[in-house]
Image (cartoon, rainbow, N blue to C red; front, side):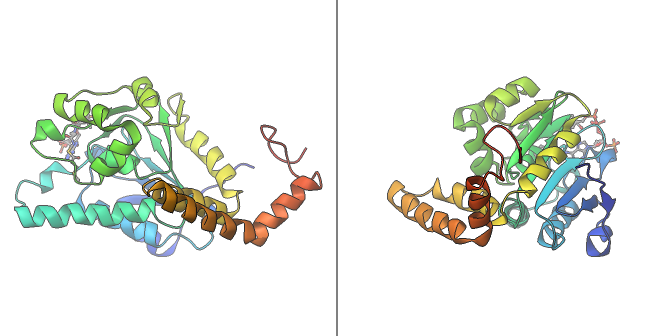
Length: 272
Ligand code: 1HE
């Protein structure tokens, strides 16, 4: 199926720093501040939060990308110079709330990465459940050079993606990973040619959207929590989650479809 994305109406159309379009279950949210390399101002954080709280009812998956030559240049540095310590804490907590809404919202999120994916831009990318990178993508955490620290959840999410030693290297030395190094480090799941990222993400989005919603919810919400639990608690929660998913009519129908030869085999796509 070829998607035909169209601008959404209503609240999501009134967020000037984002462009939101959709086709049925697939929503595409694009950071739309290319003149400032999609630097994340307070207004942009709030608009992201609003968008992910107010996804269309029929949304089953969201794709997140950036307009212009870069995904995101991170924190809008023009807004930090006057902040005192207390404001700095509230600022970081604002990002946490917005980014939690992306990671722990109702639908899986696929990010399309190109050009700069740096600082808070990498923290934003790390909220997604899947990442598709284009060859132009490069990754850095220049917080060390700017005299600050990650504040958008990076020490939790990026450290889990690439490990503390790699994150320490990026932050202490200002090292920049190119797209190949990012892929090898686990920053992207897919690496595609320049200009192909959105199409690739949209085709993944269609597959993800065709899964049973409760399976997707378990994968994106239960899995990252279970992995943080002690094994015994994790196994207990896994048993509950699997029973809940299995008890859903959508699961029963899918299993019947396979047993009655109406569903595709593993690795062979859909119905043969
Ligand atoms: C910005 C920002 C920004 C660009 N805040 N205004 N992030 C950084 O340290 C990254 C800083 N940015 C860069 O290194 C470069 O801009 C890029 C490599 C991303 C892109 O380079 P380029 O040549 O395409 O663009 P440019 O000419 O550097 O920037 C174009 C404009 O965007 C320019 O403004 P103009 O008014 O002079 O046109 C830049 O000032 C502006 N711009 N990046 C504000 N980040 C929750 S804690 C998170 C902590 C962090 O994220 S620290 C990392 C911050």
